[in-house]
Image 1: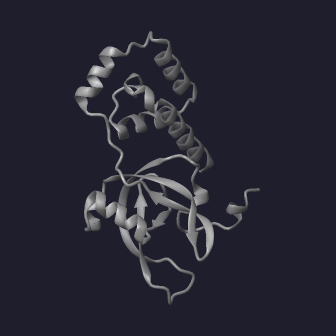
Image 2: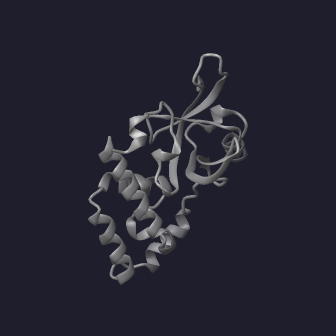
Image 3: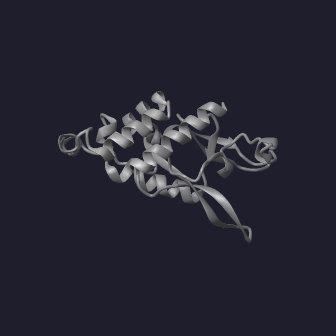
Amino acid sequence: MNINKAFPSKFLKASDFDDVDTPCTIKRVVMEQAGQGNEDPEKPVIYFREFEKGLICNKTNSNIIAKLYGDETDQWIGQKVVLWVNHDVQFKGEMVSAIRVRSRAPVPVSEPVRKSEQQTQNVKDPQTLAFVLTVKGLDADEHVYKLLDDFGYGTLEAVPVTERDQFIVFVQTLAKRAAAK
């Protein structure tokens, strides 16, 4: 038994994530009671399309998102961020793991670059063929199409060589999460 499942949380926690960057789309930001008791002040909680649980938004993460999308949380709705787990956060004198927001938004490849990439890459290329077959072998089509759309790639062949390993990890992670639900 995974001990973290014995103590479920209403909010996202580091143990909910694998050690990979996780692209997410902000669905809403609300103020909620986030502490153990009713005397704790309300805090901003960010909900994402990809998760049922919300992320309690600490000062570090709120500053990063504000830098990316502005100070008004209404402007954050529909915006993409990348969540990751930092295992080296000092909190109350101890090292803990914490969910962090990357200080850069996921940037899809622009249309002209994507088209030129499609022209130079051929599925007959062994490296590209191996990548396409690996992804298709994961048997997670809905996750593949979602990631392709999220990152602005028209086809698997358009995923840049430098991003293919990470793309495979993203698909595996999303498929694992869907299977666990």
